[in-house]
Each structure stands twice: as structure tokens, then as C-alpha cells.
Length: 178
Image (cartoon, rainbow, N blue to C red):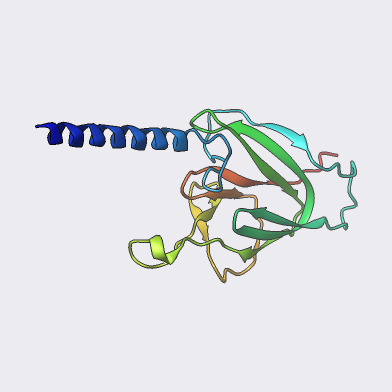
């Protein structure tokens, strides 16, 4: 009888420790690479300019080439007019910050590193896309290894995490209202 009480007490203590570890792990306030900005969000983003472009660019002037890094994802974007940062809250109410690239016509994206999933943790033993290009139609274009460069078009809204549906990079075409 005494032995069964000791076993029960040990099991209760182990379960309590396990639950505490899970709760502490769920209360991580720093964003990880799997928490990324949402294409569909009820929160209104705020923005800050990280660089200030000239007020009216020469129409023949091309923008800058920028390298975007997030976790293992690495992209090169050409003809970037300006870069700014926007903030929002994710579905859990946590703050989220992501970049917005305002680009000139003729901008292109080159995938330098696609950050594909690990083949050792997938059920089918294959690597899968972690990131996608969100299209205005609601469809997506997966970002994969050996992907060819592509032109940025107005229907490409941004790059987002396929796991969390949060943007890491949003695209806007530059509009010269003059």
C-alpha cells in the first residue's frame, strides 16, 4: 500500500513539473521565426520610415538593391524605393513587426536561401516550403530552393510564413501622385 502511494505521489509531481515547463514555454514573449505577420489581420498596422527617399525620383532612376533576412530566409529585391517598418498585433495579441518594401516598376526578387523545412521532421521525408508569396487573389506561390528570380507585380502582396500566416515582408508599388 505504501509503495503505491509513493508511485502516485511521484507521478503527480512529474505531471506538475511537465505542465509548468509547458506553460513557461508558451509564455515566450520574443518573436521566433515561426511567428510571422498575418496577411489577414484585424489590427491596423502602424508604420515608421527606416530611410527617407527623395520626394520625387527621376523616372529613369532605379531604386536600390536590398537584401532581406528573416531566420533562414534570404531574399534580394531590386529597384527598392524605400523601406519602412510596420507594427501590428498577432491573433494572440502579441506585438509583431515586419518590413515593407516600396518598389519601383521593374523590381525583381531573387531567392538566395529558401529556408525549406527539415526532411528529418517531415512525415514524407521531403523538404517543404516554409514561406510563400501572398497573391491578391488569395492564392500563394511557395518559395522553394532553386527558385528562379521573379518580377514583382502589383498582385504580390508580400512574403509570409506558411505555418503562422504572418507577414515578414510586405510589398507596395511606388505611386508618384504628382
